[in-house]
Amino acid sequence: MTEKMGLKTENLSVGYGKKILLSGVELEVKAGKILTLIGPNGSGKSTILKTITRQLRTLGGKILLMDRNMEELPGEEIAKTLSMVMTERPTPELMTCREVVGTGRYPYVGLMGILGKEDWKKVEKALETVLAKEVADKSFYEISDGQRQRVMLARALCQEPQVLVLDEPTSYLDMRFKLDILESIRRLAKERKIAIMMSLHELDLAMKVSDEIACVDGKGISRLGTPEEVFRGTYVQELYGVSKESYEPLTGELFLSSKGIQPKAFVIGGGGEGIPTYYRLQREEIPFAAGILFENDLEMAAARACASKVISVAAFSEMGEEALKRAKECMDECETVFCPLTTFGPLNEANKALLEYAQNCGKLKNVLE
Image (cartoon, rainbow, N blue to C red; front, side, top):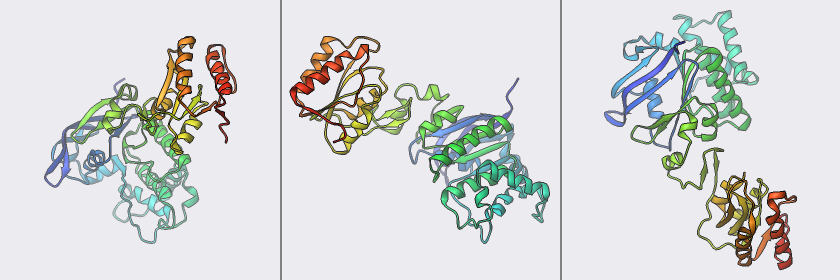
């Protein structure tokens, strides 16, 4: 079955005034799919979305909405097909949140702007979808930025769009509501077959919710593909200008780097147990070494980024005498040893021996001290 067209750009050029910022922008999102734009601040993500939503003039190429050139569509038809939530907030005077959401029905109610019973049912449903019913009767001015974000999404849903454009929809939201909003967006795409194009700063969330990722690098679209394709290797680190150790694309974790400093402490870790100790030592500006770790260990990415030195061995292999010797030599140069591990498996006997060595040297310190 052929997927239904949603939104497409062809050789699009965008910018401000007559100055082109990005050119050759080729994007396409079909019904029921989510396309997410990522890229550093100032790379042009919002400029693309503002051009698509006609807040900025197209400087070249064209935008197709449901297979039709947007330049040839009347505003009323666009309003019934495409809705948006941008970073700029409206300033409605003396309106409740319910009334603000109700303005999303204006393309359907004629010149008088009077909502009928069915329209108000759609308003209530939209408020419920984004978990905003508790603020429905409050003034739009009285609520928080995060609550306003949810109200504006409800307003967009009231338009019953076939295409939804969102610029940073998780801005101002706390952890719970970030998850709720993105789950709602994912559900809207699948259940209502809405084509969704949005931008996100949270790369870990973009990876989880998107069908496709478009990388915006300040000149155009530098990479386009599934999350698995885009986040493979070190491309995302290059896009944002960070070292490969500072970001782990598989988990979305960011790390502060402590490379090039002689370690003063040694952390015997593994299985993720050492990570809190890594972060604590970093906060206290104590350079440290980590080991002995398997290359595929849960905490390996954090160790590579945070530790001055890492003693490691190949995955699923025995740690062996050679690795133990290297770890002991490194430990001899350190003042203190921490061991958050409480159990040692069959492949982890070398770390148990390393713990005994630290005890005999009088360097072992309680991780909670």
